[in-house]
Image (cartoon, rainbow, N blue to C red):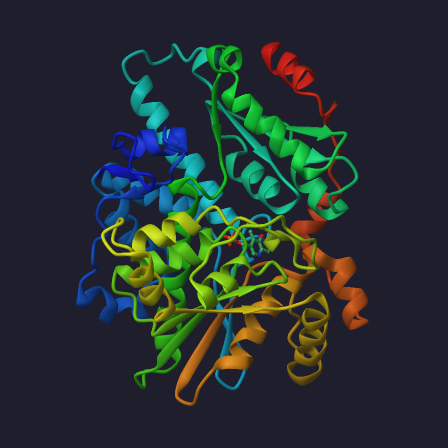
Length: 451
Ligand SMILES: *Cc1c(COP(=O)(O)O)cnc(C)c1O
């Protein structure tokens, strides 16, 4: 399968190139040239299939031409060694719990899948000169994080041969729970503690990608949700959610899928699922106070602006990177006008935006009424369904993070002591190791050049 750029000015790329490069030469995002419809028999059989079986079918539709069947199956089964259940919260509202992975984040799936796919391509490429795997062939993943992405990527890539990961994070600005998830791993993971803020970390990574000496010296790539191998596998979650819902009830439900969104990678994967025939009648993109997409839905105008800090900080994004993919999908790769595109988007997707005060109120109300503990991100999703579900509809919202990951906030808002799952506690017992770094690019560059 070939991948084209949303900016339309770069040559088409193979899957391998799209995954290794991340971004196209014209700074556009890669899109698969075809989205395969899945057959009716697949949808009929879904309720009897496991998460892994469902995901393998979906993965074949995207990657089947480029990855050997057995390897792909191995890759999917290795990635999905955990569950993604739907939990009834109340009446017709279900939580799709995406936090049962190794770092309790939904990003675990894309991170692990991307790591294994890169490894697959490395092995294929090294076939001719096996045993001659010089460090120069090592792929170096640079990732800037304000918390969640770093831990998912670090754990996804941990122990994967031929790949080294550098996680850049702002000193003192990451919660202790998050920090220990990427600073205690060792092996092929290096945590770089930058004396600055998140934007400084991101600037260092961007400068590194553009620096010709560095690119000459080492192979660099990124691992954020602009990468097709990071965001597409998230479609697995949504097919599984529908399957599990069909399992519990089969009365021709009209299903509404609600996704708390920041960079819009996760909802984009859900929309790809819809394009493959997944039975969902409409979608909601739930935002915190960063309401750029919400405003686009209301006005047809896309006006990115600096992000504002909120309780749901993984969604503090002022210029969602996957917006370009959504536009490309519904404009049929630029064939429709801006107005037609806006119309087709608003007929499928609606929006919602919530302030920190509203998020807190939702968390309290939901806990009091149902006993369910929402994290601040999931709270936006839950509230958007509560505000807009119509009779005859069933709503599923993504609970994108385990509440214990935001323990300080959740405990304070709900007045409880959120239990810490053993998997998280294990990280906290590890020994922290990191490289201290200034925010000056010259320092970061000379560090990398010495590696
Ligand atoms: C990353 C993240 C989001 C936002 O997902 P996008 O794919 O960037 O829209 C929402 N909630 C949590 C907890 C996250 O970590």
